[in-house]
Image (cartoon, rainbow, N blue to C red; front, side, top):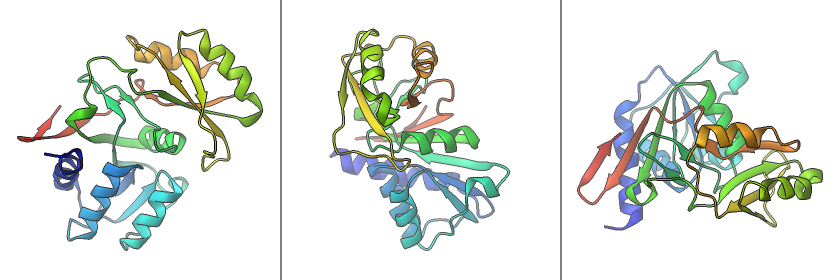
Length: 217
């Protein structure tokens, strides 16, 4: 079974967690696109959605789903998003699609965070996927020098501008044995906007699409 088919399985399984009166947070990426398409194709309707990115907002509007600003709601009932890597402790690397700041904000606001992935994203230790870090443009080189001190190799994602007008550094070669500690340390670097580690606010559940079906962690 292909990765795309496994993503589809996980996305469809997530529909079971929706309720008609909820404010739904929606992430960004290919697996989330599968989820939005499934929602558009007759899945349960929700009261409104809070989007993590401009790309997701456009797709949700196309599905006829009402969008609300995060500032207009007290809380997001459920946040659904994918990940670039995930461990069984539900720690994540996110940001391959460049929307890590919006994703982290909505995840933090959500009462529950449901992460949908295919089993190729499930790993023992984070770091094989380069860690995205959003940075203020004027600080890109100074942040990169600091990141190199952590043993990684930062690479500027040229041509990528985030929804907030910032740059992204992808840090290669890390073996992340303590995701929460590294997230805290990297957040202290002046010029860092968001770190693509979701450890202090991990997923509450992983829905993993596999050849044999779907597993929940």
